Length: 232
Length: 121
Image (cartoon, rainbow over all chains, first blue to last red):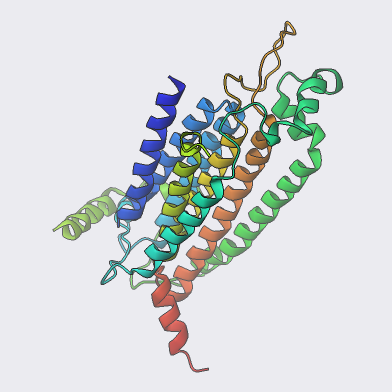
């Protein structure tokens, strides 16, 4: 049963990844990337990593997708209605498919597969990774930390400094994003048009850009007209 | 050398290489970041698969003190950290893309390079 599930999930993961590679519509690519994350969360559950599955589903599939959609709303075309702007962003078609990347990828993949031949067999309890420090974590957690979930015990206590470093990284990233995008907002307030001939009305950096605004009735109609133009 | 025991690793290498291919062959910057994300997630799956013990349970200690076989919690911890850090770097990359769009009016990498080359040295 577990084997069937693993194979099924891996097959879907492969198909989704190829879909991301193939589609030119960036909105479809974002949705496929979200599906990829959810599928990998499923695979984590099958592989007994329930905490990782939670995080991947919440942060990998949820928050990342929101970031991508916000980016598409900001970099999308000149259609004013945000929901139409997001769904019609397209990647430019290149004249021909370059061969060189394919060669690089196949060679790299072949080298990596050669490398796996030395790997210990999948799922064996005597693999080197299961020796050394892991038995200690499993045996001593109950007494030393007193938390039933060993992953929590290792994350917050045995390797608490790792987590402190992680929060530092997240903080730095948040500051970086705010600094990069705050200037954008300031220009919008000055009334300058950051790009394009038409003013892009909703430049909220946060989630506001994703919500259709209240007076969007006529803008919606206009946007729909444009979408039809684009479709034809 | 047993071929069957490595099928998992090969599947991850396939996924990883699809991500790598998107990263190096596509000109669109948002698409490149997506490729990087797929690459990243494949590495996560690879790590987690190394921690699997056949017939194991998720590493949560039972109340009644029964002795169970647990999967290795250590890769889980490392990957938890990596997922969060990965999302942070994605956010910074996407913010940079927004600024590139503002400065150059495009998110296609080759057009940005062409504009850079047009500038007088």
